[in-house]
Amino acid sequence: MKTRIKELRARHNLTQEELARLVGVRRETILFLEKGKYNPSLKLAYKIARALKTSIDEVFLFEEKDLQNS
Image 1 (tube, rainbow, N blue to C red):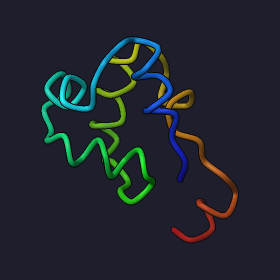
Image 2: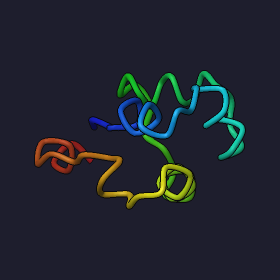
Image 3: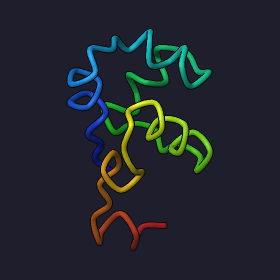
Image 4: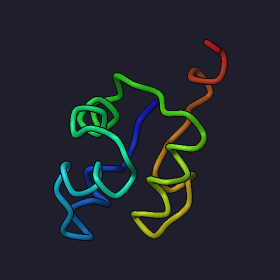
């Protein structure tokens, strides 16, 4: 799954550390999300979208192949 976290963080002038603090996770979690190495829970995805003032669909980009491997 691809994300736009890094792009949206930059738009809001947030560091990984600041976003992590806002959503209650470690900076490494944000790093892994940005690299597509971690799939967040729905709750965390919601918190991230709210912190970035957008929708989950704008942050997390699902492709058909992502849904087939579930």
